[in-house]
Image: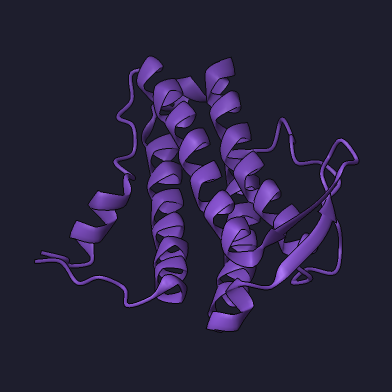
Length: 169
């Protein structure tokens, strides 16, 4: 039987840990590719996709007030593997700090913001956390396809694998 987080706040914190774990797996899968793969355009696209997840997370951090500076480019390209991983780790550390600082009432706080196309929106912090977490799944899947196409082994980064790794039964 698995241990279930008792509430939405615990679940959001669990998602945060899963995302950090999954990104470490993704970077590991990219590092495991042969050095020759690093010149392949697919390798750069894979790096760019993981960096995009980090930069999109940073935009949400700015929108919720947990980051002072607004990211200027959520679709960066050409960052090296090392640069991308450092940026991702910093973004994840800031996200983890934001999530750890939340209380149950904070999840229902409404955040007003403008989307990239300039439209005004309002979403709860819980909806934003859910989006940030699920957005990463989408792009990590794309990274897995690219790693596989280059002959590598995609990262096994599904949520259930994380749950198993932390000891849920």
